[in-house]
Length: 395
Image (cartoon, rainbow, N blue to C red):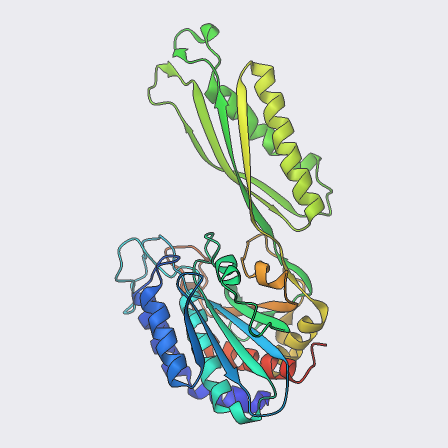
C-alpha cells in the first residue's frame, strides 16, 4: 500500500502545512498544550476515532478499530510541546507567543500525526487490527511520556509495537535515519555545590575559594570521557551553568555547577556517575572545601528493536528509495519516547527536513524551521509501517 499512501499523502500537503503553521504560530509549553490538544482531539473525533482526552494531563489517545479480523495493535506517537525560546525567523507563521517557539519540530509531528490519522481512517475497512495514536505533551524534559504511561497509555489495548519519528534539520528532505539499537542517548543532569570559606578578595590565604575549586573541578570533569570511558563508548559530560559570587572583591563561599551527562549503555552511565562523584570529592578535599553532588536520572537511551527496525526500513525505502536511508547515524540527544520503547518493541525514525540554509539551523535554535515537503513523506512512511505491523511483519 506504500504507493497509494504516498500519492494520498501528497494530496494532503497544503492541509498539513496549514495545520503545522497554525500550531507554529500558537506554541504551548509542556503540560499546557490545551489548544493543541483540543485541535487534535476534535480532528480525530471527526475522523471517527475513539478519543480520550487528558491522558498524562494534556495528552490525547485515539483508537481506530480496523474492519478486517486481527488482534494486533500498533501505537503511533506524536509530541506536541514547544520550547521557551524567542523566535527570530521572519516568516508569516512566526510565533505569536513572546518567548515561546516550536524550535524542535513538534508542530510538524502533530501535523504528520493528523495526516496519518486521516489516511488510516480512510482505509479503515482494510486494516486488520487496531491503530492507537499517542499525541504526547511535555517531551522537552518534563516527562510527558511517563505521565501518559502512568495514566494507562499502554493498556486497553496493549500495543504490540510502537512507532514514532522526529524531523531532522541535519538531513535533507527525502532522506531518513533508520537505525537498529541505540539511536539517542540517556540524558541525565547534575548539580554540584561547592562550599568553602568566603572572605576578602585581597586576603585569599584566609579563605577557601569556592570559585577556584569549581574551576578546577570543571577542568577535571573533562577528563572523565577522555581518560575513564572506553574510547569506543560514546559519552558526554558538559558543565552548562556556573553560579558563584556577587562582588569583584569578595571571595565566594559557595559555587554551583549544573550540567548534563549523556550515555548509551547502563555500564557507561554508571561509570560517568561514579567518576563525577569521585572527582568532585577529590578536588574538594584537595582544597579543603566540602561538596555536594546530586545526579538526576533523566530519559533512558532510545533503543530500536530489530524486527520493527526492519519494518520501518522497508516502509521508508518504499517511500524514499533504499539509497536514501542512513543506518549509521547516532546522536547524544535524548528522547522520552524511550520510556515507551522500553516497554513495547518498536522503532523511532529520523526524517530529513532540510532543503536549504534556512531549514538547516539546529534544533532548539531561534532560527529553526523545516521544509514542509517532509510532512507527506512522514505520513506515508508511518502509514506503510503501521499496516505492515498490523499484518505481522514485525514479528
